[in-house]
Length: 443
Ligand code: UGA
Image (tube, rainbow, N blue to C red; front, side):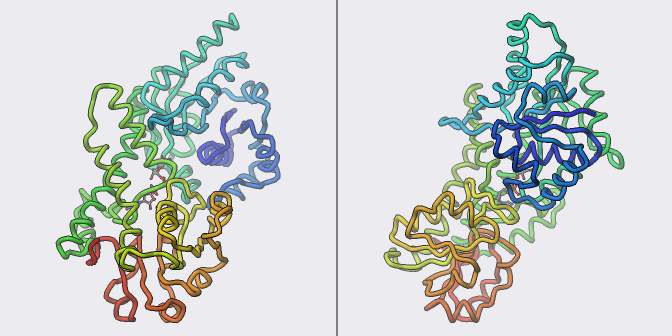
């Protein structure tokens, strides 16, 4: 099938590449010429396992192309995805500016029947706005061209985006049009062969499904973080509690890891956007508000442990920081807990020596101007002459460190572990002070 994707960010690029790899003919559009030129050369702006070879192969096979020419791209696709960003407004609601601009561009150039597919995470009611935007442009053009708008939210996780998109848990299709449903079923048939993944529903339910899924996952995390704070007060170990409750299949083991807070481009933004939507409709979303405020407070935890350890004085201290990205297998630092920690530590007069396996360029881009941040090439280099080790991201290579080396390189060593990677007793036995999340020491 002929497919066009507007937006070559995480969602658009991965979706485009995956659809091309199953034989669809995909054109991805972006307004950034440099980005398009790079993509044609196989230079991918994000780190995502498996994505670079997939883009290269399908570009070479002429199943995937990149362009800034919106007119040609609209002509190409019978199915047109909108996968552009929806950054939060100042009030937390999702900004639909880019989505509606693309809707207008599609309407400006379309000459034949189109199915317009909302892939971006957008508030309930956006499909109606997209429909209205297209309609109004067509009226201005004095053209009566048929189209329908479908909601088809994305559920990929950064770091596993290609795998999630190739083998999705579910494919949500929100539509009120039988013909559009048929085309969507055909589009996704390659991913729906062995198991029935497609769930068709009305458009508004599809839009809400996306938010409900992310907010439920964020709720699980904030709930566990609250339990971890309680565990600290009560002298319990949150890791034992996690094991204990996860074994109940109704609860499950996933997304119940207490830590230094959730980050990324999705959970924080989506919770805020749904709170805003609820408020706009006269509903006070008490649970969502608690999820958000618990997470904001949780991002301060690492700083609280370290200041408590050093008797409220971080002046002149050097802190080794392992992990800058908001989670492993990505270079994304949006809303990362590391950022909140660094900003608090700098304010308190500390120096930071940081290492991350993938996010060094990103850290350089954001904080390159700071002289109280040294970005170093290895996790060992970060430890040199440091006063403490703080861990913000659970990269695999941090899981079994050389504790002897840590002892050698850090005076009176202390580890503040925001991802509960180690056994507290084992670390303490080695002569290293240890703070985990919800694991004994309380702040
Ligand atoms: C999230 C969802 O998991 C995807 O299903 C969804 O499609 C995506 O948002 C989106 O809306 O696009 P992502 O933001 O890539 O995916 O990352 P997650 O793996 O969900 O992790 C989010 C944050 O939660 C990370 O900071 C992670 O460290 C934290 N987390 C996760 C915990 O603190 N504890 C856990 O048990 C699990």
